[in-house]
Amino acid sequence: MERITLHDKTFRIFIPHNEIQKSIEELAKKMNQDFNASEVPLFLSVLNGSFMFTSDLLKHLNFQCELSFIKVSSYSGVESTGELKHILGLSADINGRTVVLVEDIVDTGATIVELYKMLTEAGAARVVICTLLLKPDAYKKDIPVEYVAMKIPNDFIVGYGLDYDELGRQYKDIYVLDTPSNQK
Ligand code: IMP
Ligand code: MG
Image (cartoon, rainbow, N blue to C red; front, side):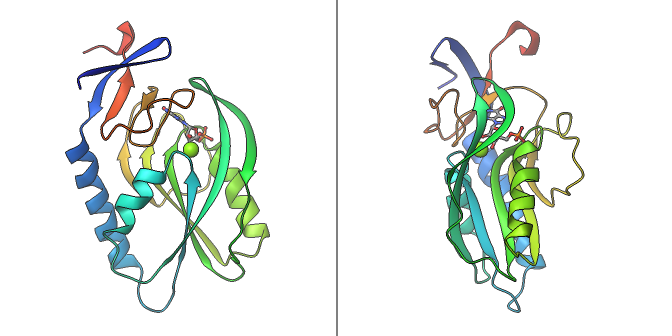
């Protein structure tokens, strides 16, 4: 599909499925080199947005790892509220562990800063950030984002797990808001 309509907005195709998959395979290759048998990291997937990314990424990892989920929310409509709601808390024991935080997208960074703090306080030995997408023009925080599959401009996107007010998560491609200012 070239265009989709969700609620009151129209989106056009931005990153096709095969490009997403290629970038994830590249990212997994890097992780496979960096992690080795001496540690079993805990992948902590941030719901809801990162469910598809987490699933596709883990299929390509060849070292032992554990997987758990956490649910937070900071977005309302097309803008970050800057305020994080913990909806489903941390259930895994992370004391002394390497935790790989798996995000769909890092925008202002408010979410990862908050989670980084929470995980460090809960005793994690090391917290590593891994994200499908990064908006470098929006991200101004100090925490290094070590694993990034793709960098994108400051536009609002949906699909492949990401939503616009809960719609659009199921698409296998990524779509961008179709406004006159970002039309090709
Ligand atoms: P941050 O806390 O501002 O970095 O925002 C992170 C969260 O906001 C992500 O995990 C997404 O759920 C959501 N988000 C940020 N940008 C977008 C977007 O372009 N489309 C959909 N959701 C987004
Ligand atoms: Mg999210």
